[in-house]
Length: 136
Image (cartoon, rainbow, N blue to C red; front, side):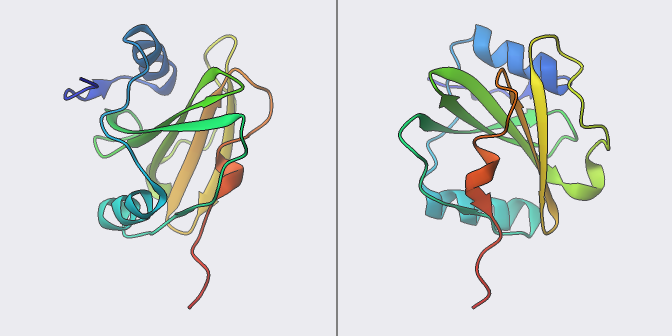
């Protein structure tokens, strides 16, 4: 299973819908797939470094949230669901506060892409391991 359908709504709404429906990604996403997907979707490859043991990346899913092109990375951090919303930086809201009670929003920009980590934790964990590729 997972989602064939695209989840619609603001970030808090998408997060709640994903959690309610079992928090299953659309597809798994090893680092080479992650890099290639970001490159083809946004023209900006993003490297996924190795995560520590308490972060479990589950995979990717589409969401119509920041824009119809938003891509999300689902992960469990210390067993808790965390969603990273990814889109072109030009489409992202400038606010960094979460409008959803109990959730925190953490922001990072990698080149052309903005990464917005919506999490029950008050500090970013997943986006710390996502970065621009090393210059070749």
